[in-house]
Amino acid sequence: MMRVRRLLKLYHFSSRCVKRLHSIAVQLFLLFFVSILLPVLIGGYISYLKSARMIEEQVSNVASLTIKQVRDNMNFIFKSIDNTSMRLVSNKTIHEALQAKNITNDYESIQLNTEAKEFIMSLIMNMPEIMDIFILDIHKQNSVVSSSFVIDPWQTEWYRKVVQADGSAVWFGLSNTSYVKGSDMGIPVFGMGRMVKDVDTGKPLGVLFIEVRGKILTDTLDDLQFGQTGYTYLVDRDNRYTYHREPQLFGHLSDLTLPASTEVMRVQGKDMMVVPSELNNGWRVAGIVPVSELVASSVEIRDLTNWIALASAIVAIIMGYYVAYKIGRPLESLTRLMKRSEAGDLTVRSPIVGKNEIGQLARSFNKMIKQIDVLIGRIAEEENEKKKAEIRALRYQINPHFLYNTLNSIRWMAKLQRTEDVANAITTLVHLLEASLERSGPMVPLGEELSLLQKYMVIQQYRYNNDIALRIDCPPHLKQISIPRMLLQPIVENAIFHGIAPKEECGSISVSVHAEGKDAVIVIADDGIGIPQEKLPHLLSGNSGQRASGMTRIGLAHVHQTLQLYYGPSYGAQVSSTEGKGTVVRLVVPMREEEEGYVQSAAGR
Image (tube, rainbow, N blue to C red; front, side):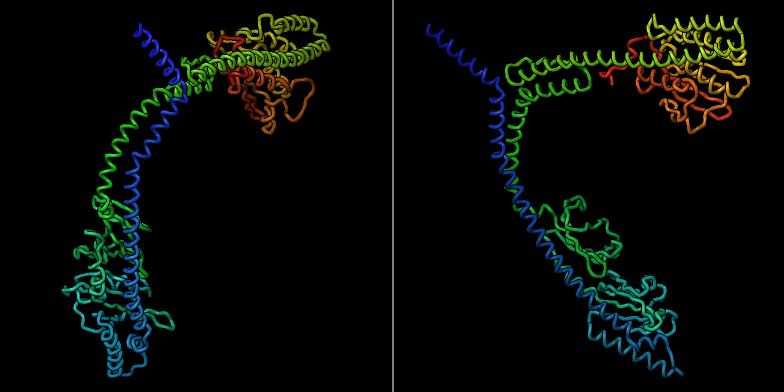
């Protein structure tokens, strides 16, 4: 007995727990409980990232400051050489030596050239980093050099580049081969060239080239190192190495495009921090720092973070499965059903029958969709009736129009005392009026409509003494499709009154039908006087810009509006015309056999 009571208590307790678990509040509590644990678990990882980032930023700042110092040192060196070049190209003695003006004999020429060389040698003595200074006459006559030629300098690449620069300084990177001697000097050298121009006329006089010992650069850059394997290099404007820790790369094109600012890039298969800076002469200096060395001191934190991340991943998988199964899947199912209902499927119903808030939401959704379905059905029915009323209004408009023009034709025959023709015309009119009463509905087979059109032409042929011919070409299988009643007669009537009658000659009207995909195309063409181009845009709106006698201007607008009311905006009439040649009206209708189903409802739009 006691055992049964314990089982009952356990049962009631478990029932209460199950009910509580059905509540979304309990489920959210579990979710937040786990979410609180996650920040604690991943704190180590965040700590690692933070420490690694701080170390990286500090090293990056140090590297940037170092590169800036190197840039300032390089700029000072290049500025000194540039100032020396400006002293040379502006020196009056050198200009006179190159131009050889006002010299009457060889002695004066030698003396002037000697003075220019003494000035050059004085600069070399005061600047021990300079090895040679060449000033070449572009005419190869009065060159001023600090030492003799070994190669023909006028044929060198540096001479051509300096001439092309037209006065701007041109810098040449480190090389183990002398630029002016053409031989291995045993030490690296670099150079700078500039055009010498006449101060007054700006006319080129010669080319200056200063060859400098590379030690002034290598002493500064060789000892500069970032971390254990980081290094520094210089590139020129063409991204060619002007300095590199490996001398064999001097002058070679670098395969790394330097960024505008400090950036981590992939260099030779490793992540490297690239710290660039631009020199005043257009060269760029870059420090390359391995990223692995930046965070080397945080390896222990990284290992701990990996274990924390692994534990967090396990917890996240369990939590994700729980949330997806208990909350996510029902909500996802409701979302899909809502999207289907938005697309117009009002037959959807949610199968969720849970006792929690999501189950209540599903039941409310089902009830809402059912009510919307009923309301849309009512709106569709009301809209259907509205469209039918609009079509009847158009029909009531076209019937007086048709009757007016027909009786007008009979009146003319009566004036001409053609009593037998009048009698036959009235008999035909009775048949046409009987057909327009819509006893069999607003839709008729196309074949029946074409038959009524032939009867209507009987009346018109009486009036015009058979001067108008009607040709009909319709395949038998297309005669079974349904179209709105009295659809073609207004178009033929307009063709007679506005196309053929005014030209006072025999005319013809052709009606042809063919299929295009799932649609049938009816083409009514006449050989009348045509329609002015400026009136064509207004025909289908019922406003042609000019009213004529009677009611003949409403026919095309009636046909176009009727087709759109029955079949939708993608169907209707198209009119094309050429003055003096005729008019073509093209009607497009779907090849369907329904009648009432044609009318477009509000729900279908």
